Length: 142
Image (cartoon, rainbow, N blue to C red; front, side):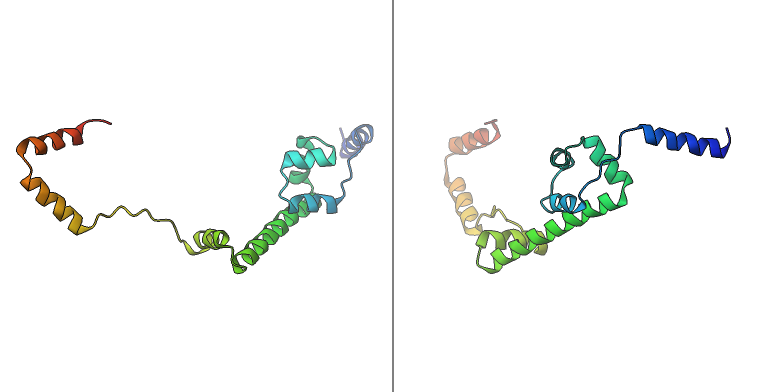
């Protein structure tokens, strides 16, 4: 088959197939702003998830609208979180500190040295039977 015949065959296949769905790219971007999933995009746009994923893969304008919306939505959410923190929301201040400053909760497991010394002294003065019993209890499974 010649190149001209191949081109004609491709065009005839397109002409006989389903017409390409035209999407409102502003709607696609708006759905991205609220972090809509591919399934949610498909439901709102009235198409299959496969169609959405194919468009994201093959249609640069569709993909750019969706990705622009995703990033705009993240930025808006971040702005709201910062406003909340600056407005005195302690929970948001703590969360942002953990995210951006590497802060973390610490569990205090240290026992004061004086307390350990007191326990050691008490064990030295305890009867042998008590010490043996404590050693046995300490090795038994709960």
